[in-house]
Image 1 (cartoon, rainbow, N blue to C red):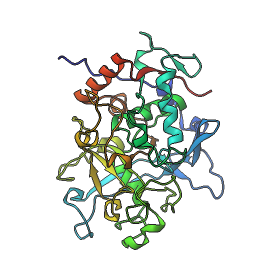
Image 2: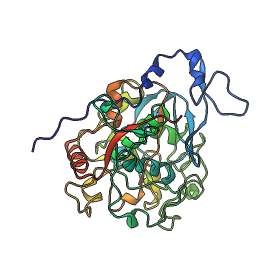
Image 3: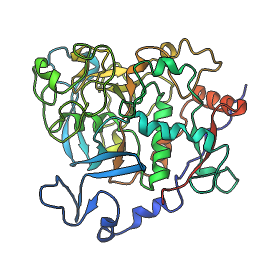
Image 4: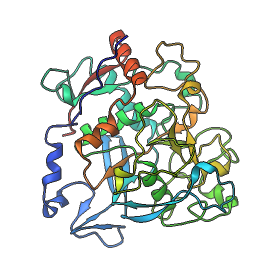
Length: 384
């Protein structure tokens, strides 16, 4: 069977890339950017402006916070002498990062369910929040997920709004960031490994963001030691020094990168930001970070890497081909995500890699689902 060509680049909303050409003097009009930060508010200097914390309001009762992260350089990976270190965490390499914002907490069900709801909205667009596909707007399309095959599995621990959203595939996570970008009019994406670890460490070089002693982890993380084998509401443990919660434990978080068992022996370590990404070309393995409520404390270390295994993680999915949006088997109940908003605007080609289908199995799965009416495609309109 000949597969269709991979989707062309999708620009989220008309005029979005016009933000790139705005002058620094005008950037304070954008959320999270100020020419003069308020006293007591943590701010990150970026040229002539400051990146500041801000709230993203998705609905009248659904919002989340974005936290600024300063640009800088650090050692990616763990040193040879770190306890519980794995071979895929080294050798350490120096990574350079531009400033960015990252979610204060992991994406919650309250947030992710708004994206899930677009599967019906795209089928009956209202012209206010979504539009039907046409030849003119096809480049802006977002693919919405099918309904959960077995919701009792995903929601076994409840579906309260502040629990972390789980079991989405990496493609589902990336499409969520694309949907979010179209809705809010600013670019969101997953972090790459370097950005994630840099934000997790918050300036530290120890095994955890608070030091080397895992006995302190109870204050900062939900792991197999204290979780009662279930996820917990986001943001209930102490944050790291930069104000980020659950970087250790609760649920492991998708990054953009392909997993390399030999670590960083041949890292893409030139440039900054997305130039550091090891872009995947196969469905798996890809990198998750942070450990989860199902894993022991050593898997929650700042440098610990977890390879995805979609073959096993959706083994009991009865669909053929398997769902491109949902995972069905443990440890997928501990798979979640966190979003990044870059200050340095990505190129069009980089955004394509952040959002779009990048392997034939996912392409086949999405194509078949859309043919069957399970899942839908449409255009998200920015919030007024």
